[in-house]
Image (cartoon, rainbow, N blue to C red; front, side, top):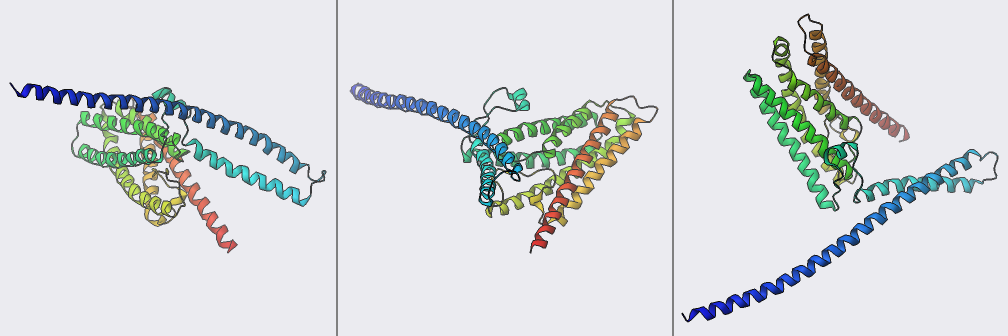
Length: 346
């Protein structure tokens, strides 16, 4: 009975401490909201200023071009022409600087992200968050590549249509997820663009068509070839990840690549070192896509072919082959010509 007052006094003291902490939390939260509003105003102000600068720079660039075109009839001196060139170079440099600034500013989502996520702001506002999201994306690709390799190997051993459907569903989910994650990364400063972005949209469509292909003679005719190709594709993607991540690590350490650059399912100019190692694997996989396309088009000509999926898969593989092959050849040719120009200048 004598311990009750002491226990109540301790509880009362504990409550007073909690009350003080609560008041401090309220003040901290009020200050947080105030700073958040200030940050929002600064973001809007900075975005508007960049937009105004870009508009004025475009107008100034057009005026400078007119001055240079009229140089023969005007009284511009050599010093004036040098000043014009210097201004144009500075404008080009500022375009890169604005790109870096906008990577930390909220921006409107593109059409694809707007359809998928609406108007949710996906811009990460500090470098640590951007790098963490990029690294998580790379780990996601690596883990799913291993899972797809094992899954395709299991499907190759066990002929069961439901298992095939589950594998194709996993492919659809994987490529859909990649397109969303890549769009978010692009909004945060990653420079992946062109065919290597569109490539995943085509792969999503192809996987979706394969998922809907009904069981039948034609499906069984193509099944083994498709699963063997999937095994090889996962193997090449695994090689690409380790090779490209090593290249990026070295180039970032030397300051030659942007910190938000990603590994891609193809060949880019910064992968030139060690070209003889990776390129044959890529070309073999690309010509396998052509072989898949030709096989499907031949199947489509058979009298028993009734499935529309045969022609759609054939067209998709042809698009993948042409996009992958010509993009890779274009990058290799461009890099080769650049190296030739450097050799001549030396």
